[in-house]
Image 1 (cartoon, rainbow, N blue to C red):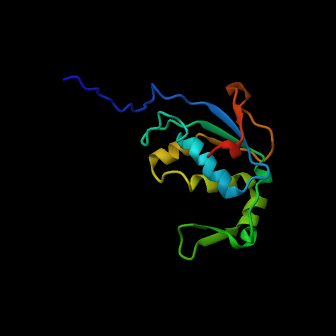
Image 2: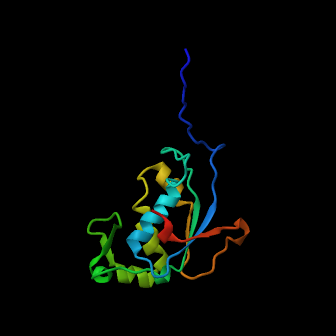
Image 3: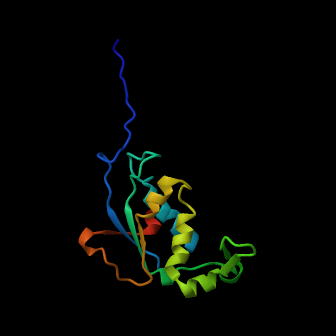
Length: 151
């Protein structure tokens, strides 16, 4: 039979190509920043994207102090957690969380856009967020990416 047969190529640990990428969050809107970083972490920008494999890049987010929220979200947006004890529900507004730890505000936004399973936990480990413009990953030779060029 003279027909072409195409095989779907699925990425695995041996065939994936992971890079280190630096993203500047200065002046970026939190939600748009988070969705684009999650896109990079997941690896959806690569031609060999495989849904069940960690084939995304390692992302370093700098200047978390410069992230923006629009409207009244600084006061109205709440982050709720529970201690596990009766009556143990605690909440922080976005401004309180930002003043306490600006990196965590960005991490929570990005983590919420990743899969809610073991793969999502593995992808989240590929994220490094820093409040300032300095990072500890110069040895990995990361390349800088402009988020406005993605999607």
